[in-house]
Each structure stands twice: as structure tokens, then as C-alpha cells.
Length: 228
Image 1: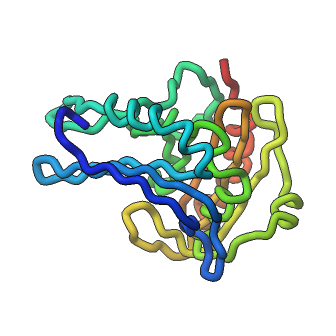
Image 2: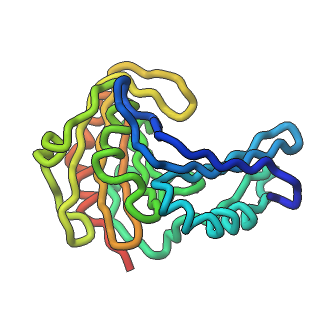
């Protein structure tokens, strides 16, 4: 990885993931992982899924890790994995939204609200990406809420995204982001749009008052999304 020797692991067993307490997990799963310590940083790559699937994808995972490269720009360096191609998508964003900087693994990022306190972005993951219900419950966990049953997920409202029905999620609570900090009184709006080869996600988070004002804009933005 990056021309250096990295630790490579294969682990089999029952996968707990980020499920709620008491979740029995998923049996007969497999995890592939790579860890590289380089110049004071740690780089991780992880792939997890049913053992039979992961066995077939091992070479692809290794090729993905080998493809990583460091790119420089603006006085900084960043690890650049293959990501979604923004040119494959088009949308109509509200005039009040501001386009944010490019971020890894995102198609586009926007900020909204009087002070840009709400963030909306599109991301794409290959395959089912864990499935619709698992991703909705992952969002609920980020908002400090209990998971939904499959029956409850089936009853969620839908909107048309890229010509198909997509579940529309609205969650309020205490939001814990990737940095680990928890922010109270937040709202999350999201849609999950599974496709034949990948899954498209649109997610917007921010303080409750700002998000209430953006609910209609979020829905229209999602409905405007098109793919080449």
C-alpha cells in the first residue's frame, strides 16, 4: 500500500458491526483489513460481508488497496481512493444552498441555513452497501435513536428518486458525527436509493430549526437527481 508493507488480516465469525445492543449479529461473515502506519498517520481499509461473497472479492479488495495514492494540492496531501464520478449525476439545487468543497467518497456537498449550519451531500457505494434497513438504522444510531424493525421501515414514506421509489427518512435527536462529537437538537433527513450495481444516498443534517426550514428544499433536491 503506497509502496510500503502494510498489515493484512482476514477474520471470520459473527459480525456485530454498529448494531444496537442485543443485536445477535450476522453469522458466517468475513472481514478483510489493511493497516498501514506511515509518517505519523494510520491508514485503514476494511471490507466486510458474507464469507462466500468476500472470498470472491478478495482480489478486488487487494487491487483497491494497491490503487490508493497520495495526491498533493493547496499545500496539503490527501489519500485519494477511487470515488464516485460527479459527471454521472445532475441535480437542481436550491438557490439558497452553497456548494461546499469536494470531499472523498462524495458526489457533491452543499451547505444551507442562515450560517451554513446544515450540510447535505450525495454519496454512492457499490452494491447493496449493507441494505436499506441497515443504513437507515445506522442513521438512527447516529441520532441516538432505537433501530426500526423491517415492518416499520416498510411503512416509511417514499419519494421518486431517479425514477424509482426511495424511502424518505426524518430523524430528530442528538447527532454524533464521524468526529465523535455529539450535538443536541439536530435533525437528519435522508433517502436511500438502491440501484442494480450500487446504492445512492442523500443525507442532510443540521440544527432542528434550520432543518425544518429546509425539508421541502431537501425533497425537491432529491427528486431532481438524475443519473447518466
